[in-house]
Length: 114
Length: 111
Image (cartoon, rainbow over all chains, first blue to last red; front, side, top):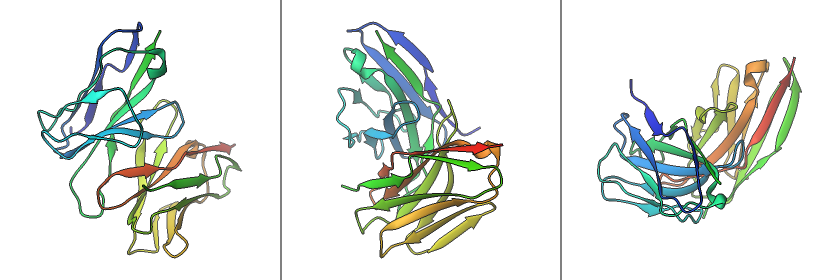
């Protein structure tokens, strides 16, 4: 079944650790996105990608980095986690469509940095 | 960039009544306006969307209206049911496919 997958779903980690949040999609979409969202609050775009080898920073400044080596895979990395990084991270994807395409979201990763 | 404002932030309605959420956007070039529903602990899911060449769209109990001149669009839910309780987000997009989201409306349907 076509879907967007995120792992881990929950992560508790200490300050200073390096973490990678995984996102993969079997939707066949070119565009992928990372959002940061505190529970029930506004979604903030932190990274997006038009396709392989394309990465762009979003509207909210983030210390994280992303890579897009394969179409279906868009991992997010934090080199040194801090308590201020505690949040939920949502991955999304959309197809290339003139005038904007529907974004489909993954289940999210809830990150707690102690 | 695009700025989307959403009102109200919370909305409590009696089951069976209607709910209306309003959003305004700043960039007149925006041409795609989706609405997402996010239930507690779940991922946001698209419930309806509208493009700038259409003034109104309806899907069963949900409808969206768009006023391009005033740069605002609204979500209407009729005959609300307990399962409509969720956080609803509006968004706007220009042709570069980035979505700018509103801050969300927490809808509670009282039985």
